[in-house]
Image (cartoon, rainbow, N blue to C red; front, top):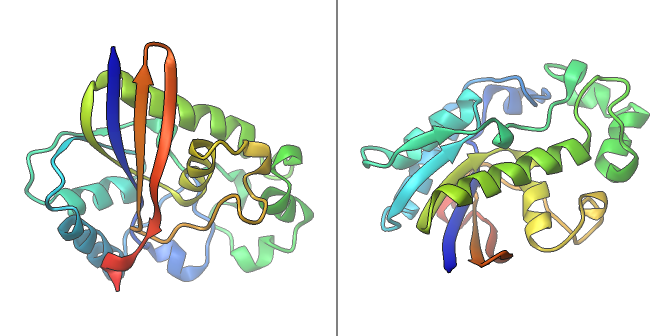
Length: 212
């Protein structure tokens, strides 16, 4: 039996902490007015896409973004903690310009395979990859066909998009293997399952043309 789904994956709208240059991770801050407008514009861009369901992380910024995208549409919205942002432990709420001076911060950005989150008590890339892919497979198990809206976070989605392209989590930060995703940019991925074989086809990455 073949199953085919189309995932519309989006990073949440811009937040207060984004503007202030603070690490968010598993913490949360509210959407800014620009973040709300970005979500509304995304909703207009996707107005003709018939979603069968929507999923967000358990963090309020993605829930709010999803609600602004969906507007008055009768689409069920669910939360999955596997879609949560990369947990940064004690770095959360701190100025990025300060913590980026730490060796382990640079290791997180440039050497995922050896980043152990020792100084912050956060989450490794391996842990993030495992739970994020589990979330995708959990969602796929529930649906047989149709379009699925998924609202998640910068690191989580950047890693997922690399994995969908067949790139390992260890190498996903290497130049050309992934890219920083803009807030409320659109990423489209087809999920095709034949018996026990699963294939991901990336159709669109980081499309922000609707935000211009």
